Length: 397
Image (cartoon, rainbow, N blue to C red; front, side, top):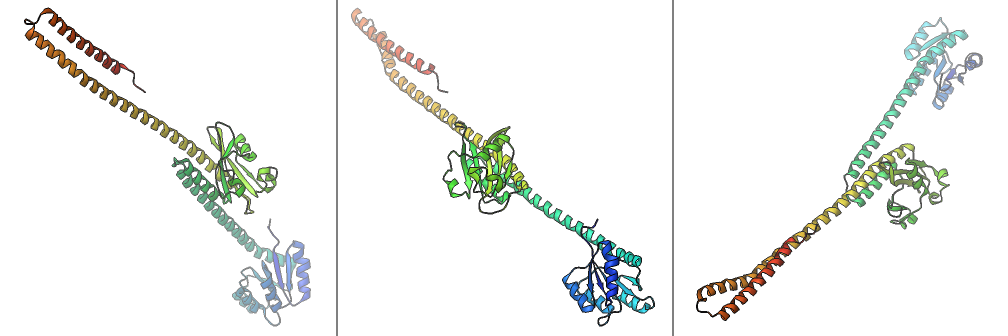
């Protein structure tokens, strides 16, 4: 079935012929019919209206049929040109074909013969129209395919750059840049659930309205974010839908995507228009959803990286404290050994002296000197016990 009615231009100076063709032959077949009484009238109509086929009297007064054949082609008409003429004028018919005519109908006209010639000419027109339509569809499909490929390439590049980051603030900034790039929205924001209070916190935003900038870093009430986090499904809402939500009435359109990790929603990523009156599409919503998946992975990775850094710092601090305690023990042991050296030397010297002088000493002097040596030995024993306790004391872990 044709997508539209075919338009046929009749060029003939005889009103009876035009009436016959228009009312009795073409209109009953649902053709759209235009009429021209002479050459100038036909050229004017051809410039103003598009015709799919032209029925042309070969013997017009003034501008002849052959003249019009040349004029139509010079104006860019490329459709079928059916000439109407007498069968006894073969030379004129041959000349008309040389000038661009595509078919011939003998006069006096017969309805069946005219319709056959018209359908024959329009067959090629319809095929060309169908071909042009298919070519146009293919071109549109290629444009859309290239657009999707560009979007997916951009999404992949953004996703790779996001997941490679380990600093939360840089992750937030890259995700918001990506959200605006992929959706073309006026602004973007990122909300995260606070683990301790359970409330949503506006953690980052780009190009936010002034009222939202004042709430940065604090808890917010956002029913759309709550909705997508509960359903774990991306939501694209137009202006009519946004009117139901008090906090979103100033927006023209918005898209919300949940940040989900292992089936748990940790927050939401949103892009919206509050200045541009353009609806966000479902395709843009899907792109935002894919970006939100990358963002969730990057946020969790950044948090784990931060926790690992904290733990590494704690281990390093503990190791440093242990090292310093060991160094202090070594110092104390060295000091103790240094203090023991003097009494040990004294005991040794006393023993040597006693060994040399014991024959000349009386019992009382010998006893006094043995008592003094015994005291020095007990002092050394006490110090050695303290040293043992110092070595056996537990180390900090």
